[in-house]
Length: 167
Image (cartoon, rainbow, N blue to C red; front, side):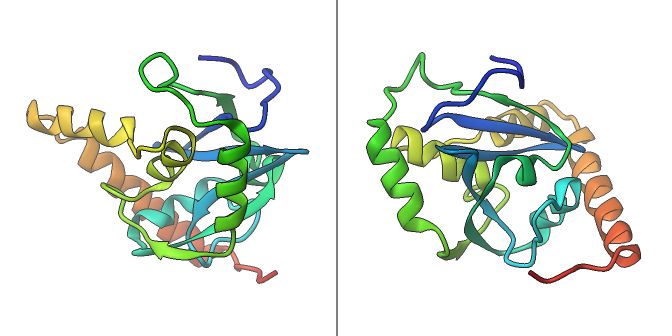
């Protein structure tokens, strides 16, 4: 894994560390990323986008990397390159840009932002966060559920206190 200082290249997966979870985007060049986010999310939402876990719809957005990161730590993380062959960069970028503006079904377990970007890069959706959570739940750990509920509660409380601006 690389640090946030690594300059992303087109087609790279960007892992953004938010409170309690990671948000994922795909770098398409010139400082922009394509990512899957709730329709109501505003640019620079940062950790507020944890609200997405409660949403059943999402929109493919093209935004500046620095706006999506919103002050959070991030890194280039092409984690499946050692086990899966990435699609050609021009195909990744073309597919990502063609999807901008599309509204699609969202599920934290099967159709989330990491599934979205890994499908673009590798042609197959996967989510390490879900895989890890399943492993911990099967092992008897309830910490994952508690973490998700804490993030959701924090986000809902925070949303009530902050006005949401439309763009």
